[in-house]
Length: 117
Image 1 (spheres, one colour):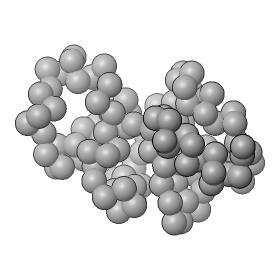
Image 2 (tube, rainbow, N blue to C red):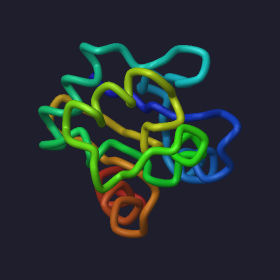
Image 3 (cartoon, rainbow, N blue to C red):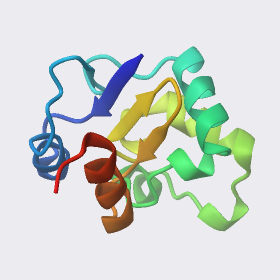
């Protein structure tokens, strides 16, 4: 299994994805085709927490008046299933690995994984 969960309107996602040959990868646009509970469970198993998958930059946080300090794992899971913008993106997932988000270390790890220098 090789999947990328991304948002097509996200310039950062497009920029990161353009660096790699994704010919054999399933590309999932999360607004059109949201993450399922089964997929989220799989991401959780590989990442170790729902919070690791949660985007703390989502505009929905302010709109909903959420206090991130009071949220637990169940809350993060529920929110991730409720609205696509709560997923930190892009998410690259294989049978063995998961790469979450767009920070420098994650992108560097992806470049190593793909053998891109």
